[in-house]
Length: 556
Image (cartoon, rainbow, N blue to C red):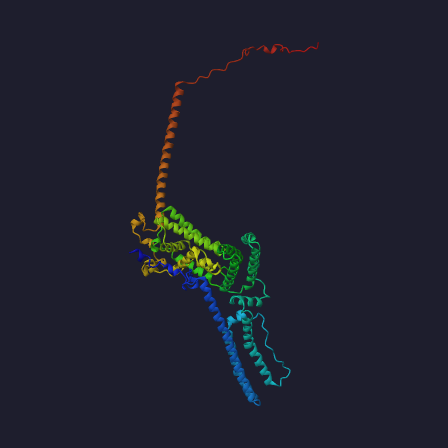
């Protein structure tokens, strides 16, 4: 089988990584193959179209209500002397009004969610003092109902689009309206939570960095703090709306810095990195994997998928890596560590740095194995293999977090954008991996996925006894460890045998020494002579002798 046919399920043309609009930047599967710039343009265009459709629907409903009211009012004026007929005509109109109200409530949910004030004035009730004039009372009720359902909604829409249309984007108009409607609400607990040690450290580093910029630094700090405080009023927004707010802030801040630094992109990028670090560290707990998304569900699905693919080997993916080489094995371990460590970072840029570090270790492993620089065709299968071995926690949530809140310039160009795009391709490949991608038959693929058999059991007996390069490296390592254990067992037995021999020799030597000492004692017996007595020991009359003379001192 040729090398090309082996790679048919994994090979990805590098042109497929670029934006589908042809702008030259890297695309992203989360953005339907578009770069962040083109995706935002498409998103804004679709959102503007939806708002216009909702506005047109509201106007249409108002016209229908006005026509229905005019028709009913005309029939009432033509026959004032027939109250019973007028009352009978009110019933179908009431049903018509109720039907239109339900239809409007169902179709204009988006408009009411974003634009309706939090407190709505109730329709004016007609006084019941004069119960005699029944026709006038019902006419006023119809008039009040028509204004509350039709003109009130249209008036709110017109007020929104005439007052806030001058803002820089539709997102800012929506956010401004939401801020006005939720002024009386308390802040989100996630924003009032006590800051962590990491948040305090990042805040101090941000202030120290801005001190070097003097006046612009004070303005940047003020705008950043104001933006974080304003996000407390946007807890009801979805993940896409929060992403739009953050991206708009990035764009506005970048434009201001570009005009201040007179086009110095390096200084602007350095400042924007610090701004991103400060903002996203403060907002991390409220915007990472929000409850309004299905990121957590995707995380679990991806983890279960990777666990089900535990049987995939290096040979199936055509990975040009030999883990028998110590340096290669070390790079593989480091790559796995980096991709797992991504989940512990808070800043999108730091998460991208983990992906970049992982990718560089992969390139080093391929280079050492092939003894030549790695190619893009070698990199993607190896990245897929690393992801399968690591099974990173909350992989989908981290990818979505980077996509939504990272500085877009990093994702569109540079090595960070290239490696991140390849990671998205690797995850997409794992989700769609099938028998053809691994050069297997559908029957074998299903058996492996169900756990009925394992591809490792298909090797012949010789492969188990003498593992070759076609066997999984884990099996080779297992056999190597078994050989070492067998060798150690033999050496241990040799040591035990030597200890027994030494103990026997010591016992024999002890017996021989004891025998020699006994023979010497028998040949040369030991004679003990009596103890010598004192000179006058035999003098029995010594007790009659006078006491010895004592020296005396005379005073002269």
